[in-house]
Image 1 (tube, one colour):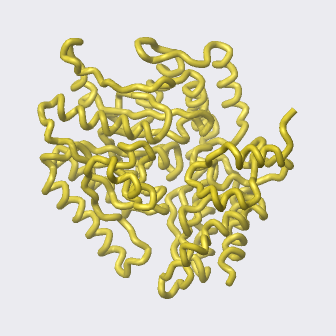
Image 2 (cartoon, one colour):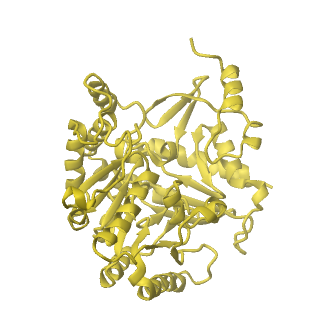
Length: 448
């Protein structure tokens, strides 16, 4: 028998430390406890229904409790739940590696598994660093990142992050990096000029420091945790050209943008770019189980080959690397992309979402609307004409999510940017419901 609601609340507050949460205020609010999910909805302990407007933090692709994914995991569970990849193989991990090499941008032929987006980035950073050592260029040990970057919370990923509120606290633990300007700022009076200056700034940094640069790392097309910050058309392709010109590796972090979120399977496809290293996570398993992957070109892989005594081995790994259950879920998820024609059907819903967002353009407290496919950020402001933000202490974004819960949807903001990133399986009617709730919640939360 499950504990009653109040017992769960007591245990939560006594024993559980929630991520990215100021617990002092959290324990004073009503606790929403999720008990089950079905499709694009989740249900609490009182069986109240909520539309999952953020895909359980950008991970759920085909909805909750999807029979095909459940069956794939159950079938694999009847065979083996876990077997190490250290010196052994397992069937789902091998099959998934072949599938990923086939669907990712051309030239990415080697798959190294891990278990979260952060660890996928750690793998990429270490591969890039070691690659240049093995090539006899050990001075190439620095990384170029973008302002506003977020690549995870392990220390290497934090070092290549650019969000002060997340990363400044740990600065004494981090290796030095170079930081290129942000690609977009809502408060900039001349965005086009600003965007061009950002790209110019990146090129100048690479030109000046390329002899010590191991790689450029970026989130292609849209920076997620920065507040859904879009890159101007052509930016990604230009960065690829700069990296090629100065022989610097390019790492694309598609943990958030991958698996259909921007309207293409991978964001790099929008500009026909193949990175040297590609980081995947979140939606890789359909949002079911922790699984991540770092894909590399054969050029990088070849540098790690050699006789045992030369110690060129990539000395990195995780206990659950290539876990069979997670890999089985990922294979079933890729099957659903094909059988459900997910990307084809998504196009009309992206158009509908764009129309609904356009209707919010005149809202007095929505200062900016940023969208790429099913990735949306609504920036809330106190004074639209002066582009003046709300006071931080007001926690306006947080007030939006509390209002949305009462109306039947789960959202999570980035500060005062309301994020929408629903499961790709959402219907147009369900999308209309999400937009209605979001609009009403913003009205409630911004009311004087």
